[in-house]
Image (cartoon, rainbow, N blue to C red; front, top):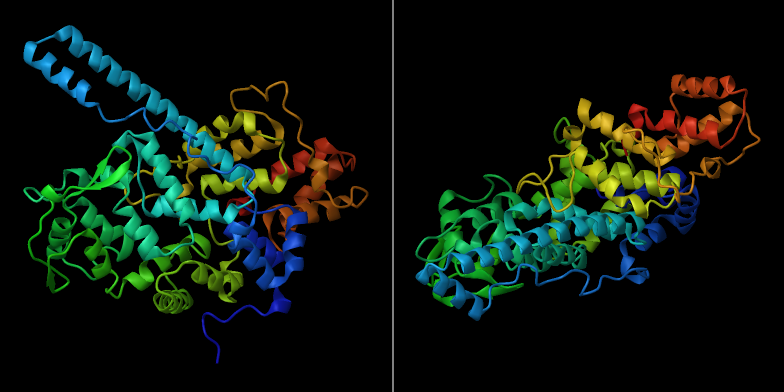
Length: 497
């Protein structure tokens, strides 16, 4: 009897499905990489992608990557000077202290911009794309924005926590980790949560957005009592700090259970609720399988429920869940291929990694800005809900930016009329052509199949590309192939992965 989690038959894992796996688990791959993954077979390919710790990181993350002390707390002597200046009305000293604070804020804003470029470059160049894809997923799930916390180093710490535990234990590493995370504590005002005046923000979002879903398995009273449990969960410089004097030690009633709970007990209680087994699984499904623009289907519900049951049985471990997902027949079903609208990051990084565009490390800032124009800026999700994704990525404004960004990667041409810097190498479009001596129609078909990740290219679009090459006197060279790629990447199908 078939079940939603049935594995794909090994002999059905062909290049088309390998391409699908590389696109969804990361940001795509070249034809050579697709062939290599295909040759590994289904199980070998999935293990290679998921067991990324076995791969060598060309640029390991260093502890001193960024300055931790730009927004450090004031020293005792600085606080004393501030008090004395206020008491004595020393406006000159007060102004000096204000200017120093503003200088640090400017330096910190500059550092978060450097951090954006650093992460973007890492996503483009990493030998572990699945790890970065999962890090990006958790950044959108436990969404935290720099502007609300104004401490770039705390964003860096959170980013590394997501990366380190990208495939760890959802309960112990990620959910418990997030209530001890300095960036999240500041972002949701838990540093203001004390027994004399409980702040409900973290307790509410912990259940509504991070674990259970809106209105699922909890009440407003559970939020209030959860907030009491989280009192005293604070920060000290760059570390979590439990302030016992601010913690409510009284008895709380959460989900009908009574006890003198703290924040960690609250997490344990949340994971006794039924919705926790499927809530994050459905979000993973929308991110990796199908974003379900018309709502869940019978097959998607069955798949999510079975994967949720496995999630609970495996004590909230993520690696076996993602392995089961990528091994499943359902993941490779026709309705789930080319069914997700590319996020701005997916669009840009996939283009760089699959089209073999020249080394763009010197213009990473341009790509960062382009992604922002399309609606996705790293370290700056629009709200605690993260990015809406799906069809929200597409409108008349973003489509203009999406097409021009790809054109920029292929040709170096920008809407402002300026091209690449003088030392940029040109794009070698011919490297994507398997048979330069082939017929124009065959070349156009091969490029459509490669770039669009489709098995059977649209006949009308194929004819248009063939006509284009014919009008170029059938010349197959870097210029004409770049033209073909420009036309292909402007097709509606290119917006999907």
